[in-house]
Length: 397
Image (cartoon, rainbow, N blue to C red):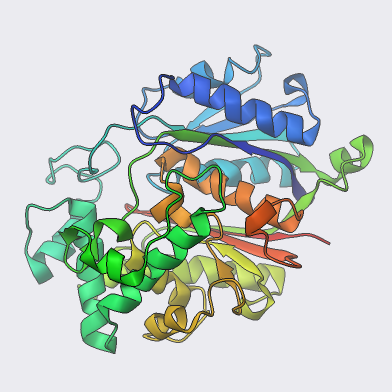
């Protein structure tokens, strides 16, 4: 049974403590927007997976009770930075498996200011951290410094890419410049200011070679998507709103993440490559068939690594690809038209569903000034250390 997204909604992503709201306020706003977009009532929803990382158990129930008290099952989902896409994947599985005709996927996060610690909980006990093995790979190859640990491991992956392939600081900064430029036209983005490559290079260094304007910020926000069956679409006349989830895959770490001792592998490049290949095989489509992509640019280097993992270019060629203009308007693909995590923001539990919201608007021709002309096929990539990579291919007939 096919699954379709028929409604999406999100809050603006904002710097923590900017707005006087609770996480349930965010979910009320995003969930109501998604239901309204779909023309669906909450009492038609049969199951609700809710993704978040920083709240207590059953916070999902507290959040969606703002939408209605109907007694439907609510599932609390935590998969680090891939949490939102994991909730969306559960919604798709519920529908494709035939158990439900209408499911609401929700993701939210209310975060603290400042950099993340060793994992989604922000803790610093690396001995017991779920990502201790990943940071152990980094420490063995590069040592351990006082800068934020996530910036360290991705910064060291950037250094490895530079040493292997000649990638330049300007090419890394070009990712940030592109995504900040894209976010100017996104009213949901945390940042909407453009920056030049030179300004990005001159910004404060977080962990060499990554500067502040190449790193995703902590953010507050929520996103939601209504996922339904083909028969629900037909029964309720939602064909004009429907975007098909043509294929979706999740992978976790294998030995390839750790065997090489490389930070490039430890931050998930092998997971992303495997998930993308599964999606391409299942859909019968490939990189050349894509029009628009939202990918997990938690740091600029991860956008470059993901170009290679998704097959947009060969290994080591991603720096030249972004520099060529192939991944912006007028190029071969438009990557992160929303501004991506770097400029739109990164409330962990909401990020994956917000990617789906952006792509749904793009495929329906509703993205306004950031619209990708003629977009019919889109791909979302969401990754979390620890690890999980989710790749989703969306299609509009």
